[in-house]
Amino acid sequence: MSQHVFKRAGFLVAAVGVAGLLGTGVASAHVTANVYGPQPTKGGYAAIVFRVPSEEKDPITTTKVAVDFKADYGIGSVRTKPVPGWTAEVTKSKLPTPITKDNGTQITEAVTAVTWTAQPGNELKATDYQEFSVSFGPLPTNVDQVEFPAHQTYSDGKVVDWNQPTPANGEEPEHPTPAVKLAAKSEGDEHGMAANTAATTGEHTEAAAASDTTARWLGGAGLLVGAIGLGVGAGATIRARKATAKSGGNS
Image (cartoon, rainbow, N blue to C red):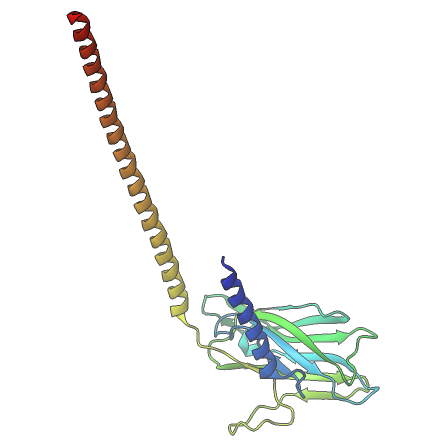
């Protein structure tokens, strides 16, 4: 791979990082759900980062953060990224009615919450914020966005609920619900990838076949030239012997 390609890749990674920071702010004033990278698609899997600032004044700290997953999303599995000084607990609940996913899988028990709790000495101070990463799925296909009501517990016992939906006029409420929009599932992307793979494979196959044909042709030509060369050499030897014999006879 050329140095030019590496430079382009580095530029793209840097651009994605800057876009993520500009889109969400270095430390938002409320709990947010952020996506760094491709937008999650309906029916697929998602990697989401919940950004939690501590808003109370010293010496009050954030000691626990809980995020709700709606049962009707039918999220079958969640993985959490370890956060130093915090423990994570995933809560699952049995569904009254199983949910069948697009791939035919039946979800009878869905994730309904993930709770992070600070170990002593690791609470979020007033000037701190923390990011909690989760990977989960399969995502629902019947909604355009997934919402995650969050609950932030402080050391004085106060709990702030981030669970207010954004109204139709788009005006942000005081305690908005963290949410992530879902992109439409594109079958064409997968087919396109398969087509590109097939095309690439075809090109390699054709190139290999052409190379093999050329090699065979050159090999055959080489044998023919060699045979002609042998014939010419043999003819020259015979003529030389005849000339020698004739010369000997005349002496």
